[in-house]
Image (cartoon, rainbow, N blue to C red; front, side, top):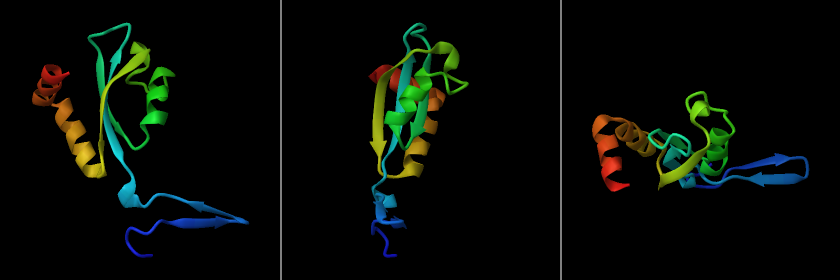
Length: 103
């Protein structure tokens, strides 16, 4: 397979197509508890539309006790490792100060 070419899988008569791995976006996000406004959570995911409802459904042990949540901010990255590095930065002391000052 040539790099950047869409991958395909055949299942019976159907052909499924996925995005090229290089086109997959990663998201870093900040959510805030509605009932406890001083509680924020910083995370990263490849599927924000799926992940955010999971936080409100209590499927994450780190966020279940402070639900419901609202999405405060997110940013898309074309590279998984850059997204994870930025998430790590936001979880640091200087990263939390950065987010607090700008959000």
